[in-house]
Length: 152
Image 1 (cartoon, rainbow, N blue to C red):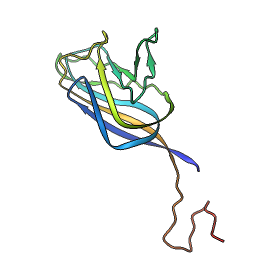
Image 2 (image 1 turned 90 degrees about the horizontal axis):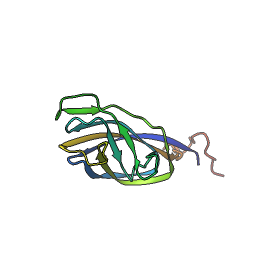
Image 3 (image 1 turned 90 degrees about the vertical axis):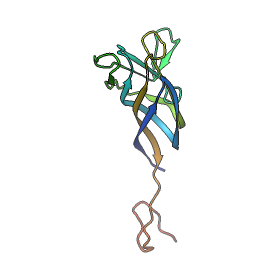
Image 4 (image 1 turned 45 degrees about the horizontal axis):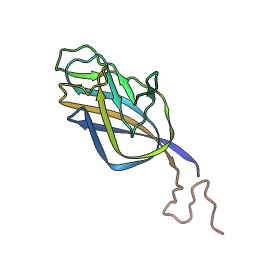
């Protein structure tokens, strides 16, 4: 069966620097995930490291001791203001298709510590899935969509 790539967007909301969000509908056959945007309410930080076992670890430290899903740099803002982090895309496909039912997020600072002064985060994630195309049959029994073999 031929397959097609489907893009979906998920909004994750957390009230701590480490949270897990259960998805109402499991995502099957995920081949890629990306950060679209993140808004955090915390004191001014120069860089945010985002870890997620479920979304993958595309970014490795030079000594391979830690992995991160994405790294984002917020624009300058007053301490405590809501900061929208700029999109830092890394077009890396997962090593194998995976099924995701929960998404775990850990937000770290440049010292590899949980973000402090944290009150909330909203993260938009783009997910690409490989799905099989199923033939559609019209309710009119005399019509068959192209590609289907007529009954004998």
